[in-house]
Length: 109
Length: 134
Image 1 (cartoon, rainbow over the protein chains, first blue to last red):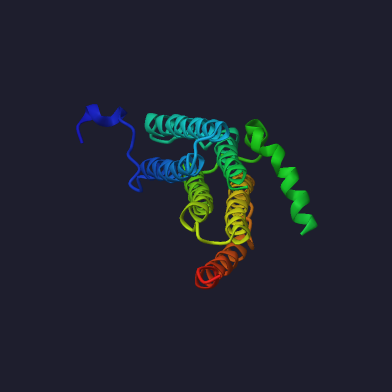
Image 2 (spheres, rainbow over the protein chains, first blue to last red; image 1 turned 45 degrees about the horizontal axis):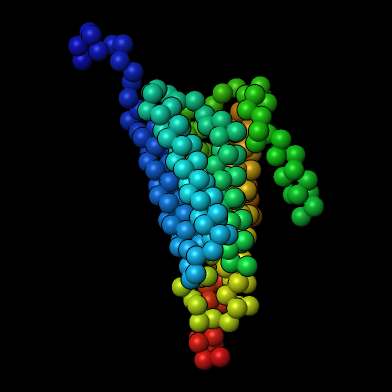
């Protein structure tokens, strides 16, 4: 190792930040599948006002999910030893998931 | 059961208050926190899969009687909600235990969820076999 490389952060051999980043990616993928199924349910049969509203709502929830994941991924990429996830961040992600399920219940009934 | 509900409600405060967790104990190795975060995300994916399954039952089993279809879909959606709420609750409990240097919390939830999923799967088989004739 050259003397100039001393200031570079030590890379975690377990690649923990990268694995966590990929876990977020997988989660957004699952969220996308659920949102697509939700939109399909909303626009099934004849298109109604309620269907379009719920469809827009699901799209918004999906965008929110992506934004949260993107924020966390940026934090994970910025530092070699990223801090723990903020509880508010985790709660927001869960609330978006719950909201998607509530949309689903409204559509199914 | 009641004890669990009371503790759950008490933990809900922590979901929104990062500073409260950070005041307790000492910061654990960042790798432990990240591992906890990945476990949380894995549970969240399970929840999303259950919710997606609820939508799928509603969409792809149109020949079923209304009651069965809606019942199964709602059961899957409710399981997804439960799973996601439990995910954040368990994450908070683990994070706190690590800061305090306590043992990680044990949980009956994985066993309960797997039994519920097994029961739903068997119900699906019965419904698909019977529902198509009736």
